[in-house]
Length: 129
Image 1 (cartoon, rainbow, N blue to C red):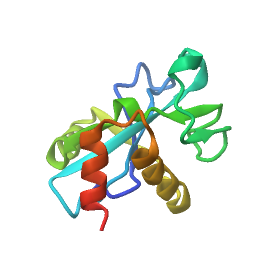
Image 2 (image 1 turned 30 degrees about the vertical axis):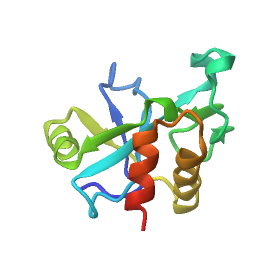
Image 3 (image 1 turned 90 degrees about the vertical axis):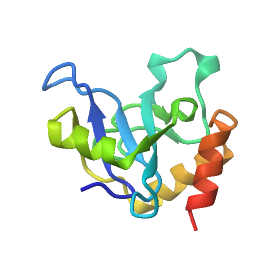
Image 4 (image 1 turned 60 degrees about the vertical axis):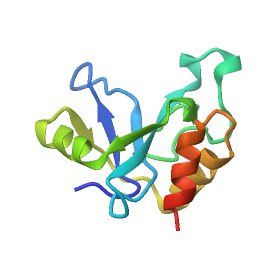
């Protein structure tokens, strides 16, 4: 089962080196689609590509352990069914849900960030009520 605030990893390179942390930032019970964003470390990007709208120092979540940011530029609008199928097939792996206060900060950041694609902003604004 997935919900608003569910986190997961995709395509693990190995059982000990997970991929980026992904976060569901729209409510799957309200629509057949969801918005998914991922967190990436500042070390993996050139300085001019870092979106500082939602920045982490490390420790805000069990799987955010170094300076990182939400990469709104690559936000995705995905079918709920596809995520559920990927979970069932073991292609993606759930992690610890994101704290509500942090989730609200990320959702607000998605609307605020100049890097978030317009269709994602519009979807969040339409489905967040």
